[in-house]
Amino acid sequence: MEMRQLRYFDSVVKYGTMREAAAKLFISEPSISQQINELQKEIGVPLFEKQGRKIALTAEGKQLLPLVQAILEAVTELETGISEILNPSSGLIRLGVIPITRLDLVPKKLTEFVKIYPDICVELIESGTSEIIERLLNDTMDVALIAANSRIKSLMEMSGIKHKVVSNANSVAVVSCSHPLAKYDKISFSRLLNERIILRRQGIYREEIDNFLGDSVKNDGIYSTDTYETAIKLVDSNLGIAIVPETFIRTYGLNEGSNIKILFLDDFQVSLDICFIYKKRNYYPLFLTNFMRIFTDNNDG
Image (cartoon, rainbow, N blue to C red; front, side):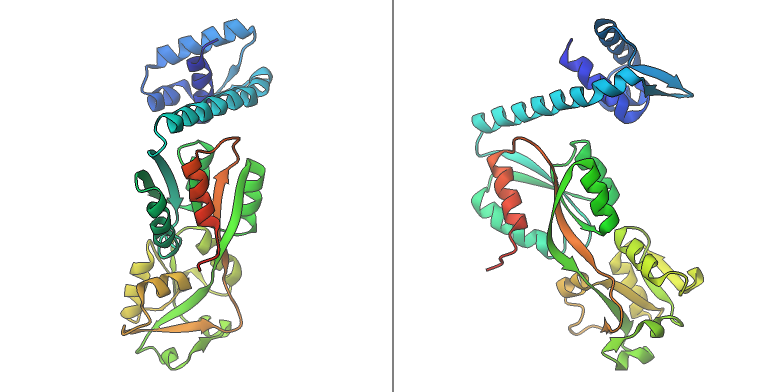
């Protein structure tokens, strides 16, 4: 039994077909098929069975999978540990972030980390919450900062991902200074019902807002954008009211000398926990351990 056979087995499970697994591993499909066949011969039982165009694990394959994954994870940790021993001052951290976490928290924490580890490279990977969780599970990301509601927290718990709440993302409404509501400092939920609301198109934050608004606001009363920056531009043109994380407003100083007015939400609030997440492992390099400590330390003093 060879390590590459175990890696190929794991990849076929992840990607659903030998063709897709071969493409991801940059090898030919016959090569991966041959190695899987050799593995099955050595074990003595079939590991896969065809289901339409895809293949699925047999009962024996399902039993073998967690054992293979444990071996591959142990080897990865061993390789990481050896690398740290040989090159203690170098390394790479792949940090996943969603838009509202990269604004103020990430630069502040990275500045603190770089003072201690100037030669450690940090790769920022910006994506949505679901994509980040998937990458963390697939070991193509080390740690991440996401916004989470109760559904996401339950999903992470079932998947073996640990989390620590580091801050909270509250919401504010943003209107143009020429909008009739600009004379107020707060806005109630009832005021939104007859207004066009501007929201980001996707993401866990949008999910929470949709859950809160329910059927109170019709779909034709909502503008959807891909970025908060675009939402603010629409507000600036007096095309509606944007509901955005207060973090976005605070970081960009949009409440200072701009053509918009920030309104606090009076009788309702859309709030998410900002969580630092990581996959449970037996070993972390020292630099990653300290990176995690810095990002989960809530003491800004």
